[in-house]
Length: 134
Image (tube, rainbow, N blue to C red; front, side, top):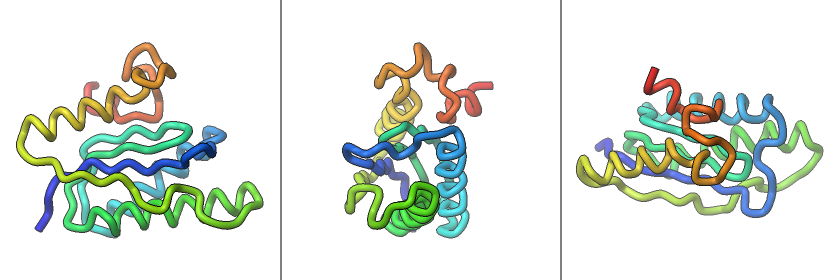
C-alpha cells in the first residue's frame, strides 16, 4: 500500500554534488528510482551535502537505495573513488495526515533558504519550488 514519506539521504561530511552536472545527474537518478518503484514525487531539494524528498510510495527504503546506488555509481566513476557515498541508513519518516504532509513539503521546499544558499526557495535551481509554484 502506498503511503507518503519524507526521505533524506546525507553524504555526511563529504560533498554529494560538486558541479552542475552532479546536481542534474542526482535528480535524474532520483527520477529513475521513482519510476522503477512506481512512486510519485511531491517535492525535492538536492543540496550539496544531502537530498530531501517527499514521495508517495509503497517501497520507501527500496526507492532510497536505488537512488543512492545510481548516484554513487556515477559519482565514483566521475571522481575516481570506491565505496559508499552516502550514509548507510537514509532518514525515512512516514507522513500521516494533511498537516504532517504539508509541513514536510514546506520543509523540503525551504531547505535552500534554511541552509543559506538562496534568499528564497524560488532562487535555488535544484529544488522543485519553482516547478510547483509557476
